[in-house]
Image (tube, rainbow, N blue to C red; front, side, top):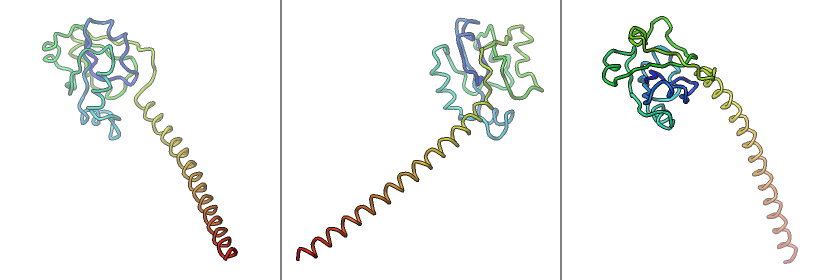
Length: 168
């Protein structure tokens, strides 16, 4: 089984049901950048590889999978089924799974998750803004606390100085 790109919806058990061995192919960063745009990929290839390897349903990762999929990859890995999630983005003008379609081994699988990469990016941006606002509020609160502590220390020092002067 080969899923030739990491779907933002993740790799679930549905992909594994199509075969006994799940190989996930990940494109090189420059390839994703070419068909998705300058802000992509969200993670560099090494991060994507580690994320995919952490999935218990994945048996192997094909780093730098060819775009489009080639006969050589299908033959080399003895691939019987090529799957892709139903929620996908990117270059729809070219069929990068044409080889698998021609062989009759291509399937679209419903992961049950409608999430797209763009949705994740928007979530990251939104959460970053919330995080920054929360930290800005904490910083202001902390600076006010420091100022109050300095005022208290100054008042205590002044009281001690007055006490020392009056006791002399």
